[in-house]
Length: 467
Image (cartoon, rainbow, N blue to C red):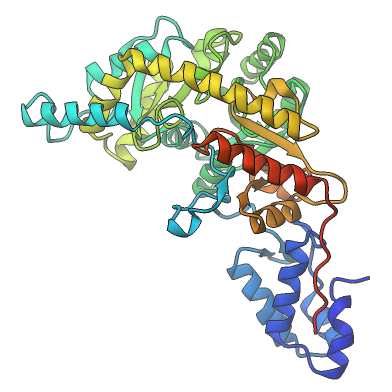
């Protein structure tokens, strides 16, 4: 049976239109019968099958591309799914509106289960008063941030990089800004980046936006494999390695101490700069030593407050050897000049409050409870990998990841299919990511998990026959 089998019979009675072809393909994609990466029939071949003009098929394909359901590759054809060669948004990445109020959103990795608004409000009120009193400058400041703000950040980041000096820290517009600046500083102009084959979409998006080659490194149950990293470095001019050793997004894997040491040795042998992403590190206070301890001379530590506090306090940090941090500071100066001193002052105050560590403890306990519920209701999950509030859920063989995500959305539950996390989407596993801490109410969270459990127990629905 071909992609167009269900509408060929009807085409004998009436010519296929661009609208009918598009509608049919949308249904096939939503039901998972045409998975991401599938090459659609060439335009002329499809037109011959359907008995219509090639221009009719071309219009249908073009509509799918505009909708983000397909992409064209020069000389190869049209493929289902968003291209991995342009910047795109994963589910839930765009601003949520009132229309989404009834959706149980497991696609966005926020930590809304404990309200950070009182802490952030107090910080901003204090900062505003200090601005009025002249304690915060209203003009431009150094691109790296004020000395007192860098010192507060250094004290916070010392849990991953002991003995950190304020001169070794720069403030950024969140951890994503720090990642992007590091990419520009250490992988532009002929360099390349190595990262997990399944990784945080922000890594993929930044590399694509900057035009820097991104090479996937295979992993196993302990994370990125050292031998696979060696092989990638032999084949490509890799200059930068991105790692998330604790609670990797989206798999939830935390590297063993031995795996960290082996990867650090490979990076040193290959002369790589390492970007260590510790945005979730606050959830694992007893984790083994990371790369900033193992090879501090070549590691840039990246973190921020979007997870530990809230995205509204959009301040991040990059920390490492002065000679490397200066390169990042130069990029920030060229691209954004500085982080607002008002936000930086608010962030510094939050970092010094006992409420920050209390919030981390509350989040760890809350995530543990939700992880227990999720593990009990959804089969195929490793309980230890849920500590970061992320569940990487394999779907049964009868489903595809995209089909499952589409069906879940029809039930009011938003999840993210695996292709959004894959450097090479056509090799995406059949899995979806669930973010366990984004839904504020426990009862609403459990309702969403129950809906997914019921869906997993069913066979995929067949699409309706085209009239």
